[in-house]
Amino acid sequence: MTESSAAPQAELSPGKKELLELEKTRKYLFHGSPDPQVEEFEPRQGYTVRDGMREPDEFPAIFASSRADYAILMAIINITNCPAGSQSGLGKKSPDRGAPWRFWASEKTHVQLTDESSGVVYVFNREDFDQRGDSAEFRSIQNRKPLKSIAVTRRDLPHVECVPDTKVVDKI
Image (tube, rainbow, N blue to C red; front, top):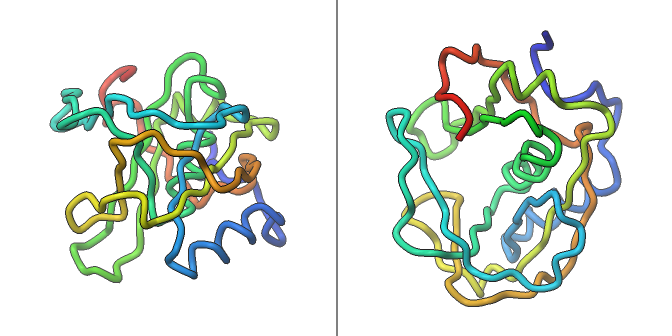
């Protein structure tokens, strides 16, 4: 079992470098997907897991993040790369606004990821989305065409902590 899903890396891939440069401008949002062929996104029902229960979000929307690493996580950890099911998430280590993010995935998820695990991060205009509370998550209830797509691989994942399967609910 590995401690992290990110493959060892000496330097950032060109795709991740580009995503981080776009993130710095604060003009763009990012959406991770296993599907490299999406030309236009349409609102879909999102879910949040609270106390082990899957709850639908308020209304269907297209979800995107101001954090490229969150989109990379979603692009890599999904049903395509983890066909036996996956569980992952993120949070902050403390409520402080500048606190580092903690990315995690279950043991079951980690063992399914390979060096060939890949996905796409779609880039959107930030002005086309509404911020969800005071978070890094944004949503749009209108169909949206991405400005561009950037291929990512397991190597591009941020550090993803491995948590025992018993600490997460089974297949969501």
